Image (cartoon, rainbow, N blue to C red; front, side, top):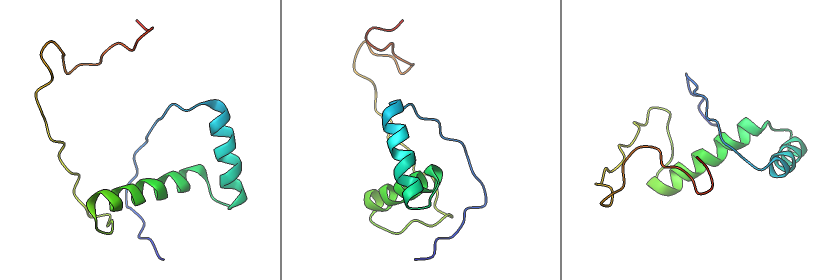
Length: 84
C-alpha cells in the first residue's frame, strides 16, 4: 500500500516508561523501521478507525467539541495528584 508523503511535519513529544521505549525501539529495529515511522503509521490507523475513511494529507484538522467544564473546574492545566 503506497502512502502519500506529507509536505510538512510537526514534532509530537510524549512521555513513556523508559523500559517500554527501549522495547518499542527494539521491535521497530526488527522490522527495519524507525520509531517515528511506526508512530506515524499508528496515528494514521487511529485517524482512519475514528473517521471511518482513509487518511489523506489534505484532510482538515477536526475541531474539538468544546463543552463547558464541570462546575469548579478550569480549562487550564490541572495539577496531577502528588505534583505541584
